[in-house]
Length: 208
Length: 383
Image (cartoon, rainbow over all chains, first blue to last red; front, side, top):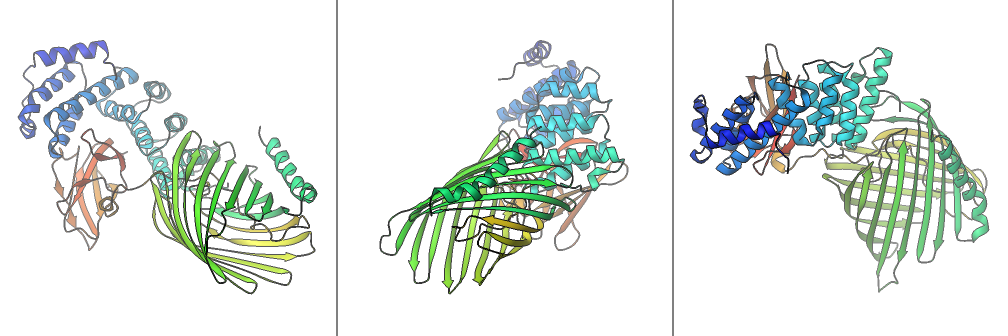
């Protein structure tokens, strides 16, 4: 079970014991009454901890739309809050809300925090797209080591649009039957070799 | 780093197959093929390659053991090697029925990628009839690329018949590798006239989830120059093989085959070695998911055009963290195309779709991930 960072755990505890009056977002009315108070407490504690509350709200609304039981909604929101806190620990206090959300998705997919930290040092912000592509690759079946190595390699030199194109190319290869790790390696090699040629490699096939 | 060792290994294998094979027994045959090829793997430019492959077959009345290996050098300097071992043993015939147990294992490696291996075992039941037989087959095992082994299983059925010097085989199979599933049908014809042996194969992958689709065909001609040497021409297009690790491609090969005097039947024509091991995992989770294909087109000013292709749907809705998870109905554009324009921020997003008021699904085109609520949600990136 994932451990809460001390500061974040303290904030959660305070919020759980004495939920403050969160801004009464009308969207909360869509939540089951059994989940509403706990979600409000979690939103409050997130704000207290300087974490973005909107992703937590969205996670709660997702549960409401899917008819999830209240306790499951609360657990999902709490889990995301922990991931957002871990993402901030890895990415630094200046990370933006979209970066934290993408970082949390990457952590949830199985990416270790150390890779997020290395990405933070390897590329200037915003890191939203590299993090999102990393999360997407891992969720799509690319082993964490391969996906992390690929994104860290590309992060220094490749723009956001090319990162997304890289992800699409990997996805196409996987859909054609290539193993995810091999698809990522081939496309990464294609890009790095193409960069040496000064071409846009993601759109140019290469020789085997 | 590893180029020299595989080369020597392959050379040793070839020499062993041709020279040492004769010394073992009259039931042993060996071949070695030296060839040049042009290959075009899907997604790659065409490339020339030089190949060296060898095969070693030991046949007994009720069992067969074979070993094959190959080494390929592309014009880019990249190298590929593969090796495999296969064996089968027949039971005694019971009336017209006969059983067969078989097993195969092998591996391949391309450039400095992680290596690929597979190990499978199976049972085949033959019903002998006149000039041929009908068979059914079931197999299971493991296949792996790098450190990610996946279960593999297949069921197959087929028949073969012989007319004079020609053999015709028809087969169909359904294979599952991890969550990749595909069904193949195929026909293989082989015949010999004098010094010329011809073989042709036609196959189709009609249904596939992650294994690619298409119609494929290969042909080969082996012309005997002498008892020990033959010219080999082969070419065609073959499908992705997620079990043994090859991605689909086209090839043409011309080569010289050397064989032991006791070889009764030449080995299969040299096929291009895979660029990398196959075995895709991208797949849909249900028929509903397969019925909805998502396209995401970023427009200007932070607006994204969502397109869902769902020919069978009477209505299409989507919901995600960009709609506050409120279902949004898409507008029907034509008989299969549904669209909506929605503002959406950069980053990673979650989405589900619903067809005809049914369950929430993850459309093809979004990455599936667990949704914390016992189901799945789709993930996509807006740059």
